[in-house]
Length: 195
Image 1: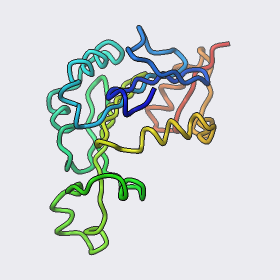
Image 2 (image 1 turned 120 degrees about the horizontal axis):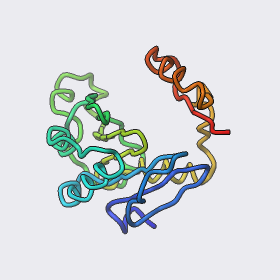
Image 3 (image 1 turned 90 degrees about the horizontal axis):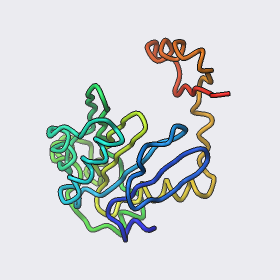
Image 4 (image 1 turned 135 degrees about the vertical axis):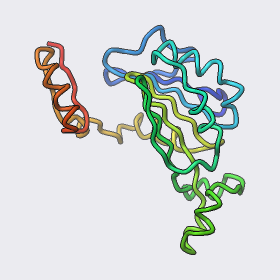
């Protein structure tokens, strides 16, 4: 399945596998997560479907305020959260390929251009939005963004090793220790192993 053919990509990561789906799975895998990504230019058209997926797999639709953040192409980097999901907006630099292939557009917030150093004035940036649920990731990218496709290509090629990001492996009996580690902000990612 190609990103160009389907404006809403649904990818299921689980137990060393990667699966592209046309529709969301009935539930997120216990040993992985579902990644839904789309471009900002089709966000409003696909919003009912995105909200349905967020409710079904994540437990809550995106708040209206966060939908406004997604629509705002010049939104500065930011972080917000609810009791169910976190929202991260960050600005990333255009890649060399994007600078060559993507049409020129005012992508850097005007205030940053006016107040930034001369080098910033020459750089194009894009706002990328991530809604992070327990087992669901929704990301919204600029039209034609290479980020999602590049990540998937690198994952399929075996170039991305997630094991170094697992800081603690716990048994089910140690689940309370996992909460203590999380509260203490100790580690990157704790994994509960079922024996």
